Each structure stands twice: as C-alpha cells, then as structure tokens.
Image (tube, rainbow, N blue to C red; front, side):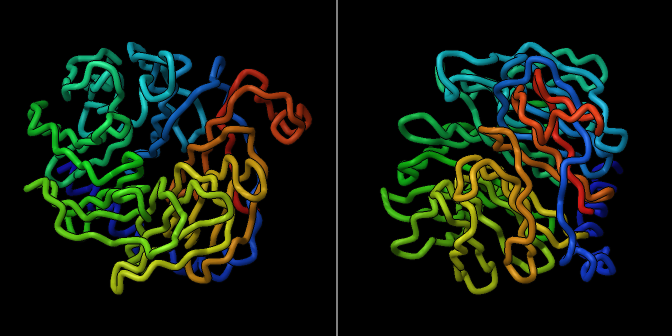
Length: 364
C-alpha cells in the first residue's frame, strides 16, 4: 500500500501545479533559513522522501545519516555507525540514502550497503558488495519492485550492486562496466517506465553517456551518448517526466547538458558547471544545480525547465555540492560546511552556519 501511495505521489508531482508556471519565471531564490548541524564539514548526497518530506543527508564528518523534517525545517536525529571520513572521499561514507518502508538504505565504505531501522536508528544489516577498500557511492531506488542499485564508482573497473529491499538480500554484484573510464555518477529511477537512468562521465575515455538499465534483468537496454567533443563529464542527473528530458549536471566548468529522451539529442547549455548533485521541482518547473566550482563560484543555479535559462543564482558556501527540493513547499536544501560568511550568518535574520548547517532557499 505504501509503495502504491509513493508511486501516485511521484506521478502527481510530475504532472500537477501547472498554475505555478507563470509565477515561477519571475522569481528569485534566496536563503531564508539555516538548520544548524554542528560539525558538518564533509557531506555527499542528500535525498528527500516526497511522500513524507523527510530528508536524509549523508554526513560523513559525523559518520551519520542526518534526518531532517523539511516540513518544519528541523534536524530530527542522526543515525551513526558509518565509516566517516577515511583517508580520502572515495574510501569514506555514508554517501546517499533512501527510505523504503521502515528501513533506510544507505551506501557506505568499504563496498557496503547498510540497512538502518528507521525507528531505532540501529544498523540492522550490512550487505557486502565485494570490495574491501572503495565505497559504494551513488544509488537509485526502484520503489515499485523494492530494488536498490548501488554504484561502486571508484574501483579500477566500476560495477553495480543490487539489493532486494523487501527481503534484505543481495540480488547480484559485480556487474562490471569497464567502458566507464571515469567511474559512475548520478542515477535516478523512472516510475513511468520502471527503468533506471545512470550517468557515465566518460565512455572509453571519450564523451559520456546516460544508460537506461532494467532493474529486473540488470542489463543496459539503451544508451544515450553525449556528442563528440562534449566535455560535460556528467555528474548528477534529474528526470523531468512532463518534458521527457534529463538535466545533466556537468563537472566541466561553464556547462550544463539537457538530454531529450524522445530524440536522444543533447543540448549543451553555457550555464555554470562544476556541478555534482542536481534536483528538479515539477511544480515550479525548475532545475537546481549545486555548482561548487562553476563559472560563478559556489552558487545554487536555478534553471527554468521550459526555457533552459538560468533565472537565479544565489550564493552558497564553498564546496557545496548536494541539493534537494521539497515538491510540496518548493524549498531547496543545501548542506553547507561551517563558515563565517555574511550571507548565511546574519543574526538579524536568524541565520547561522558557523559550525555547519543546511541552508534553506526559497522563491521570493
């Protein structure tokens, strides 16, 4: 029943709120609040469960998954027991988390996917994907069939690790991808087709691609190649069901790509770049890119999905590269390391990020 509810929520979010369209074109996004997270200085990705509004932040500095209620903008709890920062980012964790039922599934190092009891915060199971050093990094969750796809992005030959989240059992590991010569990056499940999209920054040392993977057979059923000369180096991706396109955040400075899923055409936009995670708000028709080292410095890039124009670019803290958006209240959340900059440390506005925080941005 819960999964059916989640699917309905995803489809509604992709096709409703059309009345916001005209208003969204003119708005600017600003930081309106900070949620203090003491000791936050190294994070990976963030995800929001759109059914509940609960956000999971992969807080490597505190060796925890930080659980935030984006309806009340409060840090609820921190679930510990993860690897934390170990030697280098590629051997650290946690890295991304999703909730399915009463379990939070999170990627960790070395080569692990962990199951956390949502009520107690206890790590109740650990799935070993086979590596003894490198992390499982990105992941996608198929909520319909309860399949979790973890990515070993940093091993000499990248591979995928598959887990059944209903039974808690390993389905398959070692799906080697030798053509992924710069690792694996963002992935997202498509509830309309029941497929998973996976970004490859490079294919055989050339331009990257977005693969379409069937989570049942775990085979690549289609490849969308980026054109010759495209220097994007794909990172995070966001699926736009209404327009049947994917925004590709590019690590290459000064560029963001858009993939048309109907034609396979890739449009290279001269916007920002230096991006890791991206997000999409179907109600506001806006893409969000966490541009940590792009052409404008560390900013939240806001791109109108209908015009593919940059409409707002408020400042963020240095190294900020995770972003998530609540589809109901349209607020955008960026975990930011401790800093003393004026934009997120203003007592008159109740803003403080001296020891680490999650910056809350909203349209005004």
